[in-house]
Length: 285
Ligand SMILES: C[S@@+](CC[C@H](N)C(=O)[O-])C[C@H]1O[C@@H](n2cnc3c(N)ncnc32)[C@H](O)[C@@H]1O
Image 1 (cartoon, rainbow, N blue to C red):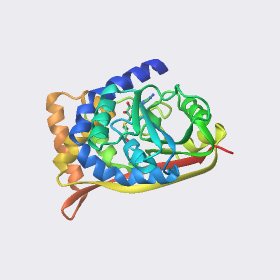
Image 2 (spheres, helix red, strand yellow):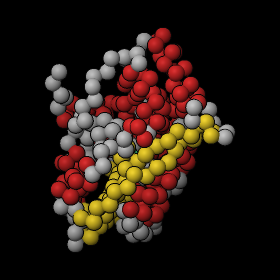
Image 3 (cartoon, protein in one colour):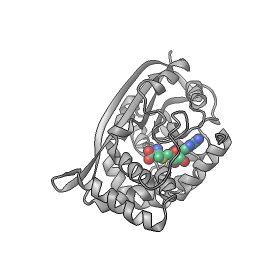
Image 4 (cartoon, rainbow, N blue to C red):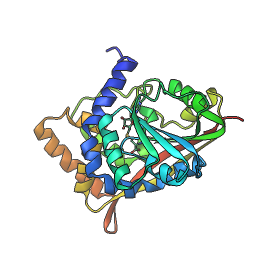
């Protein structure tokens, strides 16, 4: 089978994330709380301060763009860019409810950024870069539009075995459906999981002071049922695999996912481990 073209990947990404935008809005409060620690880490790694002009790549429903806007307030501003208009619509609704007037969301592809060279004081990006068909192209764009002496901070998923939160459903789906062997170069959840891979691309693009850390945490659910429903509602790549199962297989697979997640009970919560690769780099002065 031939690989899809970059344009085809981008088009399916757009459709996938638009399709799950309602799920992101439904679970927003929960994931906002659970994943806040990642946003704070990105804001720190990008050295955000009041007055800065910040770009957030693949903002989705506003993470970490909304925290960035609060951090650079009142004289700074944030632009969030994403392929999926419906994800951005949710982000705009939150912006309005938070009464933030220093953030703008634009539809676009992060591999071709419509901005002048050296026009931003910082770039943040959470869980976006691994879905791009041409990551080095986006990294070159990052290097182009950062001002000298400013930082980019990125969060991407680390290895599947350290991310039971994401791996459990994939493993169960594999028990029912014949999935093609994973192509390590294909866009997807774990495309940038390998240590040094994103860091190497940033270095190739001329960025320096590169730091990389596997940041460990967990997502805590009151019940394994909530884990199952939220993941199927928001994780577009997992939803795509799920759609390969028949209704009867889905019933059985759901039970197995819930049962496996139940093994992660800690006290009153189901705590599913996550491992996130945090990579930061500076454009030389
Ligand atoms: C998992 S969501 C993450 C959203 C948000 N940053 C967060 O962490 O909650 C991935 C986002 O990347 C966006 N995305 C994927 N490929 C993109 C591209 N080429 N250009 C812009 N956005 C893209 C998707 O539309 C989606 O909103």
